[in-house]
Image (cartoon, rainbow over all chains, first blue to last red):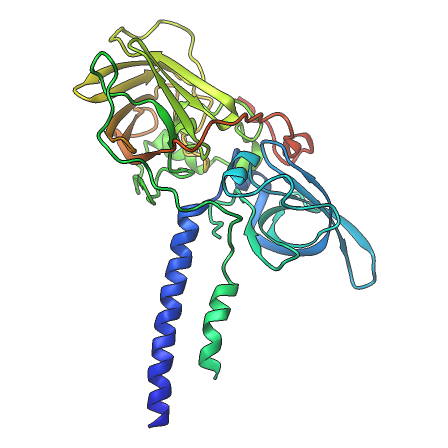
Length: 146
Length: 243
């Protein structure tokens, strides 16, 4: 009896979960598809994802894409310098970003895709802010969703 | 207890936005100009269409493109990493500009319409008084002329240089492209848009996309310099195509 009750509750919660996911997906589709002035495939590999945690050293707020620069430490403390492309400032502005959204010294986590040329370059799908929010960064990957 | 953990997990997977949302387009009848024509003016939010075969919100695509042998070969052998003209900041051309993600302002007089694309701060101006196409060298955006069919503005464009692509993913066209666009303002806040791609070298028959544009009176166009910080080109990750 208790298992049945738990099952019903689980079904209800699963239904709620599915509805929440549907709502989130709908919100994503409405507010931010990918933006691009160029072909994502010209520069990046959609099969090679990467997550970078590091310290923001510079934000370039200029068209056609913003660029985020960060220092990433490995387990031995060695610092590697990375650069990641975001969306166009215009589209990001209309999505609530500003050039003051991130500051030098911020600890951020960037999820994205690696450049094809093997350099420490990525296309940013999202940026996790110091306050824990994960914000869509305007990726040019047509498969990118919030 | 573990049942209760599902919702926070689902929420944590989402990626949010800083702001926006809550916009509702204005309501009311489609406005008219002093001479009684539909007034198509305004800043329009268009669906970003990186792939014209796909459908999505406010966009009905053409799932299977009717390629000729030449067109299929062009598509099969296109590799953006070998040359990406848009990434190199060369002109998008008319088909890809109308597919671009940034907004467009349409300005209209009795004789001319100008499509002001925020994407790379390009514009395309053409007569709408029924005159014929000009005889001139082919161009990136082609030569457009417009005329009214009832309340629909029909824009006919030919004389493309063939150096552009239809969309971001790179569907091809040739210099024989003939593009027909139909703009119909259905009410104050919306425009019905239809684009027909007629290119006998690339496709066996004409095909089209249909879209809905939304008026954004809360937006103004912003400057967009493609060349300002095009690091990807300067650092060699994007290459200029060889024409």
